[in-house]
Image (cartoon, rainbow, N blue to C red; front, side, top):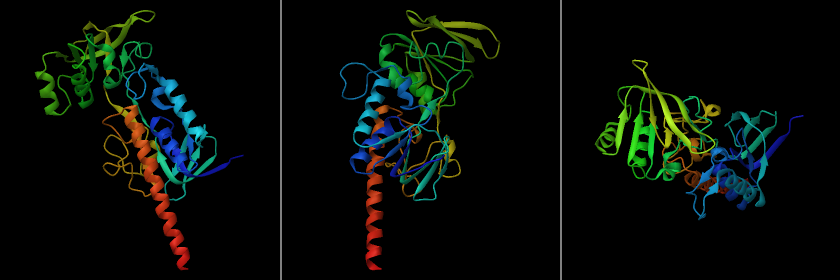
Amino acid sequence: MATTHTTRMLIIGSGPAGLSAAIYGARAGMEPIVVQGLQPGGQLTITTDVENYPGFRDVIQGPWLMQEMQAQAEHVGTRMLWDTITEVSLEGPPFRAIGDSGDIYEGDVLVIATGAQAKWLGAPGEVEFSGKGVSACATCDGFFYRGKKVVVIGGGNTAVEEALYLTNHSHDVTVIHRRDSFRAEKILQDRLFAHPNVKVLWNKAVSRFSGDLAGGGLQTVELVDTVTGEASSIDTDGAFVAIGHAPATELFKGKLELDDSGYIVVKPGTPKTAIPGVFACGDVMDHTYRQAVTAAGTGCMAALDAERFLAEHEFAAAQAEAVV
């Protein structure tokens, strides 16, 4: 039989953004409920080495970090519920979500922290070498390729930005693009073409990632010419797939304003959506930084703004009742 769960703060998503919102919300007495979703812990649960999260001198593991965040959230009073939301109603408060289990979740405020997923090529070897030479985040993993050869796959802003970033670590960066021109902004292209450590392979698509899974990791990216069909390859230490991200916003189409790429639109500098009492944080609204620490920061912001929203509305309701 379906159960209705009620709370002052309902959080959908359990990555760094959702759990940070939960920690701050619980400490403020909002007794948050976190609905964990299909991937509890978010993208960090499929990330191995994390070297850039503040507070840790040594390399830590992504799954461990998320376990610690969840334990902290539960310790201060968060309820973690394992369900996947399939439908939402934003006509509250209370705001309502329905889970795949049939359970109903109601919150006086709603925090959306459903995140985003990197788009992948689907080429053979991509999954097997993920974390062993194949990555979708240069700012996350570029540091591990200091002085090594790397390739970036893609042709939009993301690919060009990733390639330029990687020149901070590598003297040999190759961009592989399946067409004969980039879609990236001209100013980014100009910077790329002017950089002495970057070269471009045009009209090339990845056919396979190859290497030594038991030892050295990725060694070769196999290619096929998109015009002639000719096969070739490039030796490399690391490959960065940079063909964009897909925010998990399918639930909110037609209910919240989304930008052209599907990210939730928020008031600049805040996690506030166009609907009072509904907040978005983390990668579901941030297509620029996409870091665990920035996601956690926006989760904190969402909780603080949610607390203010509830306080203002509860005060207004008390004042109205006093007048009556």
